[in-house]
Length: 292
Image (cartoon, rainbow, N blue to C red):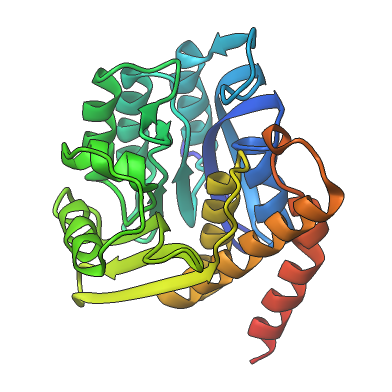
């Protein structure tokens, strides 16, 4: 009996991340941002945590590796199709291998594969990882249409030492070119700053050889979850027809607005940023884009 395909009514993304019950990041960020952007989001949770792993102690962690293949099998039995596959925190090298196989299974030649190699920050791997995760993420990066590492993750993927900024622009361009040589068609490197005034990302399209720096105001304070917020805004923009540099500008602008809103509220930086306050502006920006 032929399986009836479940086609996207508009745009559909498979979001493959963990769920942290408290501390806004991963799926609790990706799902509302993508949904508000008019994108149907199918979620594949890789792990369930009581909080994220940054600066919280005693968090619970339930690995969902054994469920991932069943998720993929069921989705395939329904004939589900995706405009994009967006991966974030994966709990182990085995999970990265499973998700790589899932990408092969659901990639139909038109599916945009967006990989956020979420495994490190501030020069260190996350507490639940060791060096084997670097090799696993490097192999997953080969599948990416858009690779979205931060500076720490980029250094690990390239096998280079991590350095704090400010950075030299020529060194950043060398870095994003090296990341593309891992297999990614486009690279968006976050945490880039050349001075103490601006912070943002560097974009590189390996197909055209074009670089773009997209910078916003530098705020010398760390907020957890900003990488997931940025990546989700970026994916939302790409699926709404933005070119890479415009999508990066969209994501930088909105992420800066989220940080400003969080500072105004005065919440604990561990709790993540107040992205909820910025969703109306995001929706207005997308509506203006669609009206053009």
